[in-house]
Image (cartoon, rainbow, N blue to C red):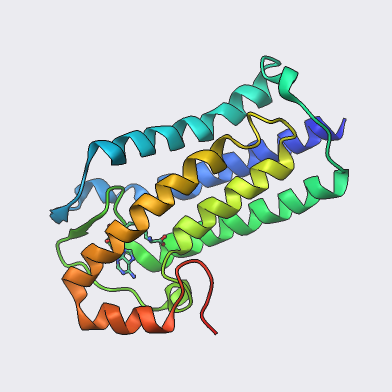
Length: 192
Ligand code: SAH
């Protein structure tokens, strides 16, 4: 009974993420890149992320993955719901604050501005943080070894691969301003 309730909660969250993404990325296709970094590793890791996001939908809508089910206490499912809501809010907020500087591929666009306000005042990678929180919420909502963990397994290597590349490119573009920004912020957690 609660298993299917948390599946519904997950699906609603998934739809909300999709809407936030669609609204905020509609203009990104018009962007002209000054610098663009795209490699085979990037494509592979992005595709794995896509798979990690879609596997739960297979679990929600069909019984094929049910052989890998296990049970978790109900309260953990509710923590998952709260975490998912937090992830959606953080995703929306970081898109809102990053504005036209958002790109699907790591790069620098024309008229790229260094964003150091809003949520970026505290952490440098709120959008990646939102994805990691979403992946943790997925584990708590979907009590299945495959569907629960599929996104976390994909997002961690993606994050580790991207974060260094991204900071290098931003350092190249903004130099001392980015260095100073790094001194006052953490990657995923605020610096105290
Ligand atoms: N890593 C960030 C942004 C992800 S979108 C986050 O997790 O919130 C990826 C693009 O954002 C990259 O092409 C990068 O150039 C740009 N970017 C990342 N941090 C930025 C910042 N503080 N100001 C402006 N652009 C930024």
